[in-house]
Length: 206
Image 1 (cartoon, rainbow, N blue to C red):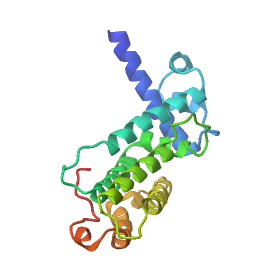
Image 2: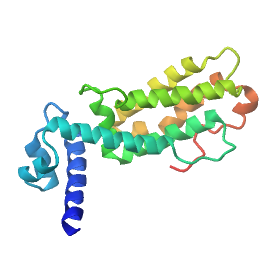
Image 3: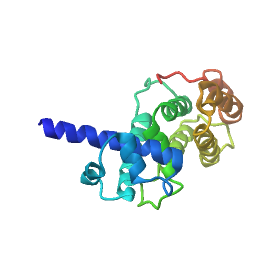
Image 4: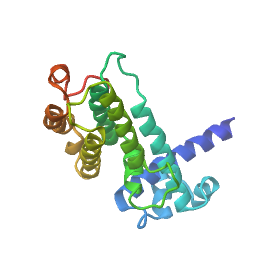
């Protein structure tokens, strides 16, 4: 049991260290030597858990995807509109990206690595945004003439833009930055009766 716990801790340390090195240097320039040094383990210990740098990057992405799913599956008040849920979730995502290097690097690795279907974090995020907006449209939460897919394109582009910029400057992932985007978008998206109840600053827990 002690050996299993130690192995699990080593694996977790390697995943986080790899995320830090990949995030700082990029996948192609990152070395296993640097990852081992960051984790404080030997090359043998790394290869016990991961057969290659690519395998390690795959695990970082898989762990990041799990964390993204936790962000979008968080509990929100049952009475919350789909639009408010979307606003709140973008705030949660920005906060998580700011704090969690594994999640942040999982997004950035999407630009560098080939992916099997269903593992790219940006695709997963875009699909969730579109699903929420389709439900919002069906519930009458979008202005007449505003299409769910059009709003999804705008929201995805804006939030992914914050993710990319936030990798270099955390201010882009701040509550203020996300709120400013929604203050511009909501009046053109939500009908007036709903708009009066929406909070661009978010209502859910971070």
